[in-house]
Image 1 (spheres, rainbow, N blue to C red):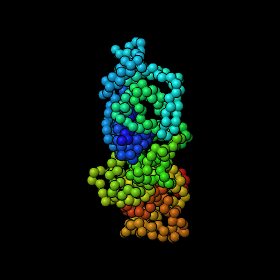
Image 2: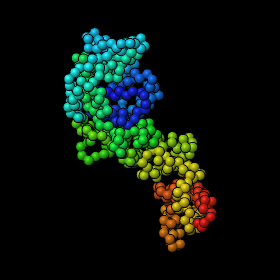
Image 3: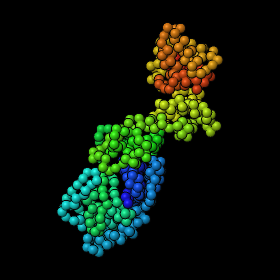
Image 4: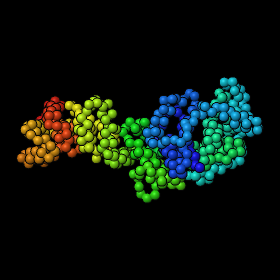
Length: 443
């Protein structure tokens, strides 16, 4: 049976690269109907923190990557590592270091000479000149195991059949193969997957933007969209497909279709894909996602109008790219004031003739007995016809005055949902905003 593992160190938040590694392991296990193990490599006493571990667990759960075994903790297996190290020492394959720290002597493996060849499932045969390798520390003088020793013992004890990890671990492989050789046990199969690169093709880092899964979660990305996107970073399905449900990805996933070169992370592509997933969601499924964000902004309380909120979400549903963007678009419908984009005020409300147009619109809207989208559109188009101008000459300043920005959903549906009283109040506020900012010139 196939058995794989994801073994993070809780020394930081779960970042995109590690999440992609976890995902490839999880997909391989699910495709092969195997076992996915979650192991915590927490032997770095100085840097390992529980807050990082809890974030890693929360992020994996949010992404939908459930594990079949674990979590196992290396700090609870110190005696196991010590026993294996002492066995190698007794067999003359390892030696103790001179000097002590913490009351123990370090145990060091005498590295073999010659060449060790790895038959990597992604890269093919890779040979290592062991004459260039220094002897390997197994147990440090503080009593804790070294990384390259502990992971070998864990993988053997836990019967891991495949080690799927990033290319940056290739340099660790000859050290680990030497441990397997010294213990006279067969190593698992290795698959080193390409690193994730920024758009400049350098290794992805914080300078390329957000890197942790919790960052993307906060930014309003959906977990299934993020999983879909990162599954395509280094792996390609058959055919020309991008948006794929998780069951389909599991069915198609194979290590044979994992590439050898770095995969470029494009935030714009992720935003596009997230928008596709939002549009595929039912409105009632989006409401629980946007409500906490709108409450956080102070726009609504627990007694909000659920029907009205649903209608506003429905208005922006076709154009939203993230849950954050959707919540930000919905929130102003439940507030009295408007946050103005100063560039929009300057480029639209400051134009000559806008003052007169807004005054006419305020008067006309005030006289309307029906305030629905069709009535509003007819009203504006009639005003444009009567004044010999285009409807857009009215629509653009109305939008900025009422919403604070130059683009958005259907204007007439928007102001109908805002309501007559608030719309007129915002038109007056927008006019006052323009007048106060540009009172030195005509409007």
